[in-house]
Length: 421
Image (cartoon, rainbow, N blue to C red; front, side, top):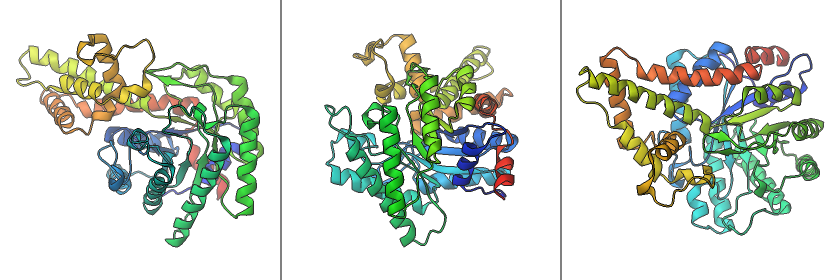
């Protein structure tokens, strides 16, 4: 990369820009195709990319690794760098940890680990992030394995938050890392306890006071609830314009940016509203996975037609393995609504199977059988003159371009560079 803009400076530019408004985009690294698509459009449209990897997606091997091409932090970073070198990438990307913290891996929560053990594993994960060059760490200690505990006490959230920031800064210094690590705190979930404007502001105040007294970096993002809520392949929440504006004003008062999570599947009119509302950044993840899976299903329809014509002798079995692995991944549990009956997986109708596949397909791309059938699909289509992989990449770029346009991100890297030179 020929460009390097510190992520804090990038966020401060967006917060303080008066002549024109911008919103940054954090994207879940769902697949290698999506990494390539996002890097290509970042270079074409000149804007910085934030890769927001959850612990289930990318994590140290000793902690269970990640489902995104079976990556730990090093393999994830190396994969991005290899694509950058291949395409001559000359813009800016940031490696970001999304929802780091105790019980943030599904297994840790399902195993009901005690707090001290969960915190220790979270620290191990953060250490691997730091040693592999992550730019932003989301400190989110708001999960609890006790299903009866719907809201984690705000004092517990605060104490865990500052403990984890102190630990990360200690690791950075002990390892001679001079690059600043930026932090994001808070959560969009009601279990985080930051549900009211007063609680939101008081939490920021406490963080600011503590970091100043203890000479720690003030986080650059505070996550706030704007009303978004992702279920199935829709945003079923109620985006709150008034609340979003107030949250962004509160955050800006303390020199930090409002970060919105669960921005998937929002309509363009709501995306456009982010600029005047002052929302500094928004995260999108599963929606891009849905776009890629739908593109694969469309390619399967093409493969079927050419198989009927006799042009493809041995069609792939991707539809069957992708559907099977999506359903039995059990990843749909967190995304379902009450209207979907998943009590008998063997008796699901075709419409529900399709819905679950679109929703959870991206979790299975690195499964050995799924990966083999995806490659077979691509090879079959190549034999009849169709570049299936490029089709998927272009569909992903189309979805990203909508956010680039609505968030006024085109040319943003150059603007930040000029303003901070």
